[in-house]
Structure formats: structure tokens, C-alpha cells
Image (tube, rainbow, N blue to C red; front, side, top):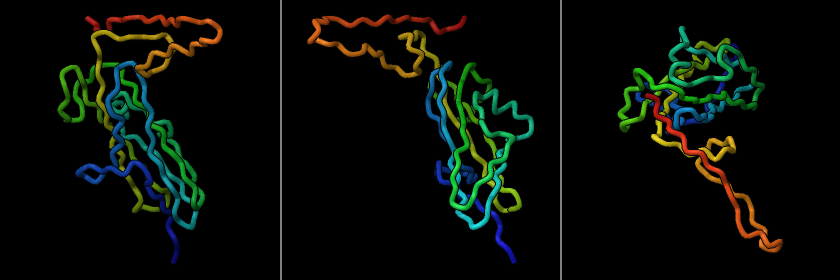
Length: 178
């Protein structure tokens, strides 16, 4: 008699038709980055060690613009402890074949996966499907602040000190590569 280590997936909760957990990063402009995470909890009564594995020949994950920070490592979880598996999506190029999802013209569907296993428990394994859509605008506006958001920040205007105007410098960049 004994107890097997066990880990519960807390987020995301969406699943595909095959039962795999789906982490949908959403729609992102090429050249920018967006982070996501898979949250795990050890709800058992014994410590658990989680293995984060990319498929053999992980080139497809990287080619699709995804990276998994803990890939190829193990994470130890005490009973009741949680951890997040960090995923980054950074699309740079147009992909040859996407995730089979229909997207608008000028967009590309990206898809990859990784596996989460619990050591010493052959019944605990989750496949996480990663999906995202990348796009390119014909013209991009860069406000020079290094942020990946679409907001132009002008700062604050102090009328009490007689300030009457705020200025921001914007750069228009042709993002089409011919």
C-alpha cells in the first residue's frame, strides 16, 4: 500500500477534442512577445516532482515562436505548493504550416505542444497544446518607449506651473519585407 505523487492542473482549464490542455496566447504582432503560464498544484500528501518535456526534435516548438522556460527540467512541489510553467510567444517569421486553424489574410496560426509528467506516477501526464496567431501591420507606430503596447504615453501636464503642451515623438515604420 502506498500513495502516489499527484499534481493538479489549475490553469488554463480549456481542453481540445483530444483532451489536451490548451494555452491560447491569442493574437500578437510579429516582433513582439507575450507570456503565458500553466499553473500546477500538488494537492497530494507526498512531495511530487514534475518533469517538463518538449517532444523529440523540439525544433517545431521553437520554429512556431514558442519557448517553455522550464523545458528539460524538473520542478519539486511540496504538498499544497503551486508553480507556474512559463511560456513565451515571440513570433518573428511567417510560418510554413500553422495549427490548421483558419485565420485572416496576413495572419499565421502557430501551434506546438509540451508534456508535463509526474515522476513515480505513470498515470500522471498532461499534454499542453500551445496556440497563437501572429500578424503584421503594413505600417507600425513606434513611440520609442520600448513597450509592446499600442498606447502613446504623453505624461502629465502641470497647469499650475504654466505648462501648456506635451509632446511625443512617434516613428512610422514600414514593416513589410519585400
